[in-house]
View 1 (cartoon, rainbow, N blue to C red):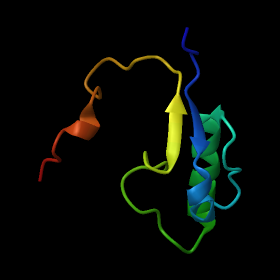
View 2 (view 1 turned 180 degrees about the vertical axis):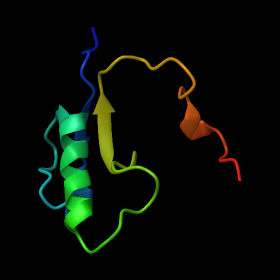
View 3 (view 1 turned 180 degrees about the horizontal axis):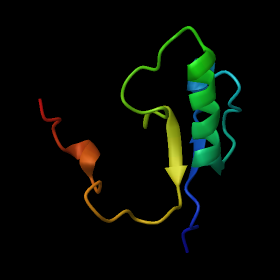
View 4 (view 1 turned 120 degrees about the vertical axis):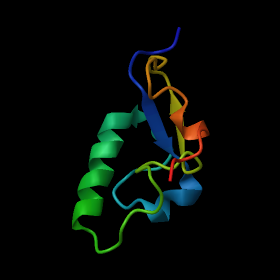
Length: 80
C-alpha cells in the first residue's frame, strides 16, 4: 500500500545543485520543498525551470493521486 505522504529523494549525481539537501535519503517532499524555497530566496542564483524539485534530479514515491483541474498539467503545452 502506498503511503499517504509524498516523499522525495535527491539523486546523488545532482547533489551539487542542491546544497543542504542530503542525497539518497527519503524525506517528505514538503520538507525538501521548504528547504529549497528558503535557499532560493537567499541565494544569488535563481531556480531553473518551473519546479523547485526537477523530476530528473529527484525520485518521488507515495502520496495520493491528484484529482481536479491540476491533474496531468505537466503534460499539457503552456498557453501563451
